[in-house]
Amino acid sequence: MAIELKLRNASIFSLLFFLSFILGSSSTATQHDLRITYAERRIDLTSHIIKVFLTLQVENKGTTPSSEVILAFPPAQIDHIALLKAAVPVGKKKRKTYTSLDVSPKLPDGPNGTKYFSATLLSPLKAGETVTLEVLYILTQSLEPFPTEISQSESQLVYYRDSAIILSPYHIDQQTTFIRTASNRVESFTHVEPTNRAGLEVKYGPYADQPPHSFSPIIVHFENNNPFVVVEELVREVEISHWGSIQVREQYTLAHAGARLKGAFSRVDYQSKPSVSGVASFKQLLATLPPRVNSVYYRDEIGNISTSRLRLNLKKSELEIEPRYPLFGGWRATFVIGYRLPLEDFLYESTDGKQRYLNFTFGCPMAEAVVNKLAIKVALPEGSKNPTVSAPFTVEQHLETTYSYLDVLGRTVVVLEKKNVVPEHNSPFQVYYNFNPAFMLVEPLILVSILTLFFLACIAYLHGDISIHKQKTS
Image 1 (cartoon, rainbow, N blue to C red):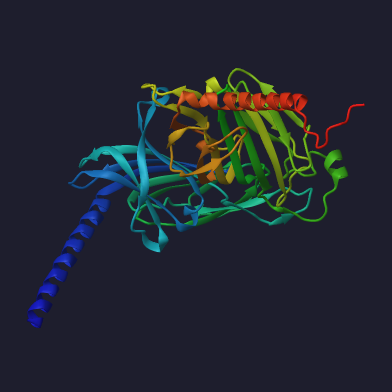
Image 2 (cartoon, rainbow, N blue to C red):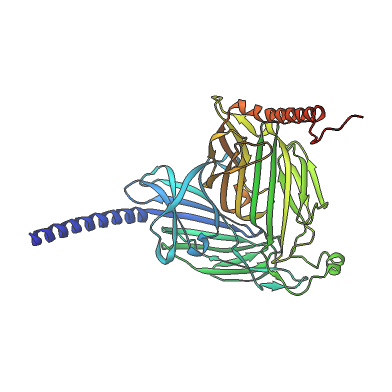
């Protein structure tokens, strides 16, 4: 009996192994059936936020249709990818439009820790057909200051590390990489023939017949004095009032993520030689706020900061602010920005009239800023129920309760959190909720009750005798 059981288990194990081998072979075969006939990559290093534009022409050389294209990334870049998009272009030149594709992580990992992402095609790519993919991915905190410390009058030099050959699980027939630097000052760059440099651009390639998972490490050392603005933590509090306004309060913990300042800071040199002293620092920030903003304030722990300018127009409002001191590498500043917005510009009713929803912008209003940790807290009016969120990307969310003026039951707060946020995340999101209009009478009734009790107390005090002993009349 025991022998029969062992034989049965062995046969089941063999069957499972055979099925897994067949599935693995089929997936590998599908991967080898696709071939990249042409690839072009353009890497923009003009800011501390790196943008990579990748164009792939993919052909199905096999016999079975393929419904996805695999994108590969080295393990050193995975934690720095803030955004990854893929689209299929339709049309030519000025009439070209793009249809977005769903992109999701794919397991298992590739060789040497390579991470895979799957771009799902609109329709399966049949044998002999070709499709063009436009891929955009954004990297943050991928420029390494070298030297790591500089004096007040020195320019900032940074390293960028990548591969001259595009990492891919497919065979690439021909490929070229263009790297655009922030300035003409390029200290050094790795040569992988053919390699050419002209002005701000370094060209790697063209390279032909590169096998899957090819990798050729390169380093580009160049000057970049652009502000390395990093918001370590940003909390945006949005409070909705059905009496006509939205109150917004933003708490910033901001840092300069570039090369650290070596030595003491000289205010005299900074003021007298602005073109030389402090070229790698920044002293101004630009925040793009919604139109029709009012009651704007800007303050820190000490108090109100007057070095700010607000420009208003019909499409947007620009708030230009200056911290109390210029920011050098490693320096930090904390401050608060607040403002009011008209309710009718952001609060709407659903088509069925059963729900109301807030249409607001996600992300950070600061230009060219990376946010390590962003939390948006939307405080709904008291009495709101069943809140739901619609966002264009994945966010962590949970509910809290807070109390404001004249609140009895407390307000429901929808908290949205996301890490590694870039300006491309500044997209609208919606918060839907149910609200009973009868709750709008709660606060007026409370005020009327308080005033009524106050007047009754005054009347009782004036007409009542609260003395302990009565006075004797003469």
